[in-house]
Length: 77
Image (cartoon, rainbow, N blue to C red):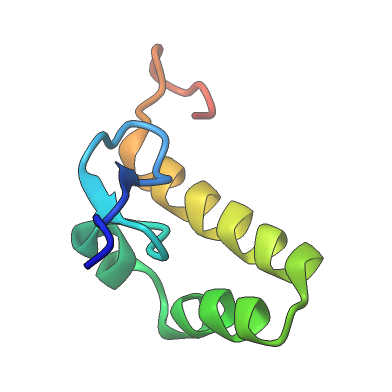
């Protein structure tokens, strides 16, 4: 049996461990809108790697927008 490779969740501030083939930890993955959750594996399976990268970047941006807080009141995150 081959050993399972692990890496970190792709969310900017998350260091949760995920198995090879997963992009985000379960908490971050299930926090995404369904359309984004479907776009990531669908693009990968179809071999559309540019679309896959864009979907992962969109997901990361959505997660970051929720998790990053502005340093000063009225400042954009």
